[in-house]
Image (cartoon, rainbow, N blue to C red):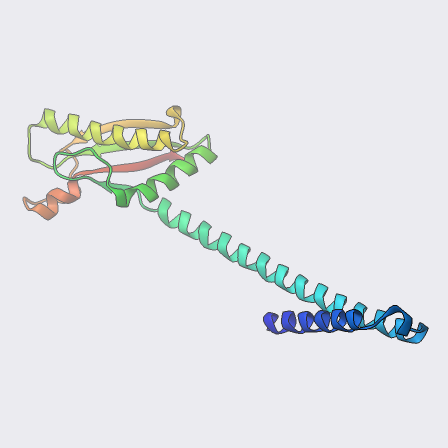
Length: 187
């Protein structure tokens, strides 16, 4: 519907320009000049109306995009567990969008505090798994700080293999236990 209004406005404006371009100053008398002015005025009003409609639609589109972006950010903030490969502390690429959302939230809310809980599966010695859980939590901490979070907002804790998310001795269970969890202390 807004395209139709725009096309009408452009058609009126084009017609007014065509009539103006074809008329010579000597052929115009006062009546014709008044008629021309009325036609030009209608074309300008129609053009202004169409422009306002397009601007309004643009603002509505920006509002919808902003709402969608806010919903997407909220959905990313709901992701608080990040998984790692066996014996690794490298952040996976699929985790980076959610971690970036958490970093943005922390940067925007200086009073917010989080605890990063590092975990490992049961393979390896308890000491090794504590160190691995800590390396994982520190990797997440570094990522958050690189994306805007402050050092004072983040605390790192490692539980190693002591708090498994899944019990069992299968690859699926172990994969669920190799993680860092973000726990908000204050929002």
